[in-house]
Amino acid sequence: MIPEIKDLADEYVSYIRLEKNYSSYTVAEYEKDLREFLAFLHEEHINVLDDVEYPVARLYVTRLYDRSFARTTISRKISSIRSFFKFTNARYGIQDQAFRLLFHPKKEERLPAFFYEQELEKLFDVTVGEDYRSLRDRALLELLYATGIRVGELVTMEMQDVDHYLGIVKVMGKGRKERFVPYGSFADDALQQYMDNSRPQLMKQKKHSMLFVNLRGDPLTDRGVRYILNDLMERASLHTKITPHMIRHTFATHLLGAGADLRSVQELLGHRHLSSTQVYTHITNEHLRQTYLQTHPRA
Image: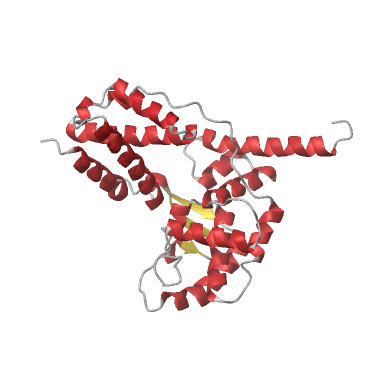
């Protein structure tokens, strides 16, 4: 017997959280996309997933365009719902043609945002201090920039994943794919200070092995990392939006700008496909072009 649509949605969300081990941020985004789609089905008086055919899928995407969503957002929503139908097809034989036949919107040519070195230094400057919070924030920022890891990989890192002797961290990436990423002396010093002098005090008799903790001693969440970075931006008087992924973009851009080869950066970032890494070459090329135009006498 096939469950009700709402129960199928709940089962799918549990599946991507527990079995696929998606980050809490990704699960929240997928769940939000799915709830919006279910609300649309309710409005259209569709109560059975097998009734979702291609014209229904097209109508839903048209509604998304009517709401002025960015093409990247619409593409993600299509992927979310396509994944849901793939899941229900595999478990209950529900037809999944409708969203498989949809084309993704053509991507906008938008380069990933990153920090210049001078901007990044301002962020590091506001983490200077010997109090527990400053030590934690500096270690967090140093590790993000030193390794380029995703926020979901950072908040699932445990104490034993840090190898001070070799200067590497063990990272559990997408699809539970494990990799080892090196980090430098600045990050090592910040991590040592945090692990020795800050984390034990922040823990407040709490017992768990997660590396980064909040001010109550509980494991730091994706949202908590975003709050910390926004606070650092405000204190540094940098008037731009920041996300943990922006630090990841900065890591890759700075490496390629200094001469690192594309394959090495791909391995460090944990990208499955080289095409995912190649976007950063456009950033460095554009930076070179702007530098040329601004400095060459006959540009």
